[in-house]
Amino acid sequence: MEERKTGGIGYLTGKWPLDPDKSTLVFIHGAGGSGSFWQPQIDALADKANTVALDLPGHGRSDGPGKDKIEDYAQVVDAFVDELKIPNPIPCGVSMGGAIAQQLLMDFAPHYAAGILMGTGARMGVAAVIFETIENDFRAFVDMIGTFAVSPKTDPGLVQPFKEEFARGNPEIVLGDFQACDRFDSRSGLSSVIVPVLIITSEDDQLTPAKYGEFLEKNIQMAQRVHLMDAGHIVSVEKPDAVNKAIQAFLEKQGL
Image (cartoon, rainbow, N blue to C red):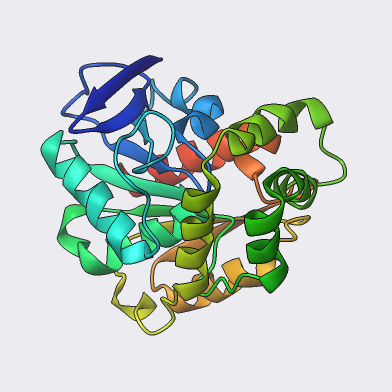
């Protein structure tokens, strides 16, 4: 895995330079996170596809302020893909990153041949208590997310790096991320997505329950869904082998 930075955007990549003959998985993290969230995928899938996990503005190693609209984050990601001339990009997003991936498939359709949506929904209303806790007691918010983002069956040791990443975040940027999620609504635009889309849901996801993924599956023309047991919202960390297997099978099925 290699750490790089271009145009103020930090990112991790499995191999560099990117192979122009392969598809590129462009991993997009969730609210308050960074590209390091995708470490279990970056190297494990690097022989099957190019892998790039970026830090959104204001997150991780990236410069600039964060955003409070999914559309604005999508513009940043698409510009990043264009600047790096990323070959055959496939956005793969979790939670807020999944909303950004949806926006990319709707607003920049010609640029993307497929998409992967994980632990996300077409509408992700955020409870008032989350906003209140971010503003009044950020440490308590980190603990709360660390509890609700995982399955009770998950080894707590797997969750610790996720919580530590959250704890390093800027509360104002995290607040903006959740405002972006709360404002997001792709329901009227999903019918315009006409590329293959893999949807991954989890049995114990309390933040974006499986019914969110079921809605996406029903409303995206070429969607297929994989449902995983004994995992919560951060399924790619909790069940990395199962997620990697699902992504690899999807790429092979689509000839990507």
